[in-house]
Amino acid sequence: MNNILEVNQLRVAFHTKYGQVQAIRGVSFHIARKEVVAIVGESGCGKSATAQSILGLLPKRNAVRSGSILLEEENLLSLSEKQMKEIRGSKIGMIFQDPMTSLNPTMTVGEQVAEAFVVHLGISAKKAFHKAIELLHLVGIPSPEARAKQYPHQFSGGMRQRVLIAMALALEPHLLIADEPTTALDVTVQSQILDLLKDLQRKSDMSILLITHDLGVVANIAQRVLVMYAGEIVESGSVEEIFARPQHPYTWGLLESLPRMDDKKGGKLRSITGTPADLLNPPTGCAFAPRCPYTMEICENTMPSEYSLSSDHKISCWLQDERAPKVSWTYERNALEQ
Ligand SMILES: Nc1ncnc2c1ncn2[C@@H]1O[C@H](COP(=O)(O)OP(=O)(O)OP(=O)(O)O)[C@@H](O)[C@H]1O
Ligand SMILES: [Mg+2]
Picture 1 (tube, rainbow, N blue to C red):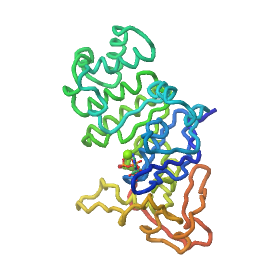
Picture 2 (cartoon, rainbow, N blue to C red; picture 1 turned 45 degrees about the horizontal axis):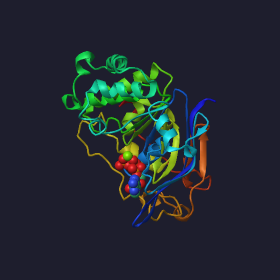
Picture 3 (spheres, helix red, strand yellow; picture 1 turned 135 degrees about the vertical axis):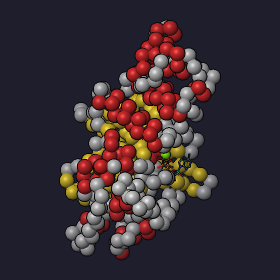
Picture 4 (cartoon, rainbow, N blue to C red; picture 1 turned 45 degrees about the vertical axis):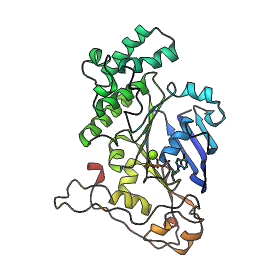
């Protein structure tokens, strides 16, 4: 099988005192081997909930999942907590936004990286520490022998994220899930970390699911993009397709809100007006309709069908219907060159 991951009709709801938050509302996608797929969308659209569903890290207390998540043909939703623990860190590596909270302040960096080897491979602490130093070198940490003996607070944010990448890659996972891995870092460090990820991915057989709210990041590293809005994928396609022929008005909004490199006048960033859908009471029609400049009557009461522009470009929007008025959107700058 060519796909490392297949997610089918994933639904996630959180029970809260206000009712059920329908965070993920029927999401389906796949990731091929060696492919980098990005999920983009505004805050609250369900990006992290999707990642946590795959990792089995949703809070047990109030989250319910349904659908299926096949990792190399094994349905993760039917595995026990013990089995999922084994998969996390071995078959699936993960990195999150905040490198400080993911590291243990009381252990040296080397010991933390070595831990995966001791736990999963059962090798001696000394051997594991040596392997950890090799990994720290691989992720671009200077003087890794000396650095391995230091504690996380002695590292900068960018260096800490490199440590987390080393930990995530220790057991050569087939899939890496990176949830906003560079959001907490400043711009230059962000691009260094992304370059590192890209480089490590190219040298291995690993696939990456990259979560970001920044379409600019996507263009640099991903091959395919899933645009999420209010718990659904509203448009998906190759990076080239999404940047050259975006079709969903929400994707247009995301593209318009990208900062312009060529903007010498210091023009204002455009953001999408209106507030995201209320997931406690999800709409019966298109969730984007209240914010969409092109809303038609049908949008407000009927969920849009999925249209295919090509085998790899899908859009859930009534504007794709042949009876809909033709709306053209032009994007005068080339976002891929950002
Ligand atoms: N533990 C929880 N209990 C209740 N609701 C939750 C919980 N976790 C997430 N949610 C809700 O589920 C929805 C999706 O959240 P999620 O964290 O997946 O968003 P996101 O796209 O990752 O946003 P961000 O860009 O801010 O990280 C949001 O409406 C959020 O408020
Ligand atoms: Mg998130």
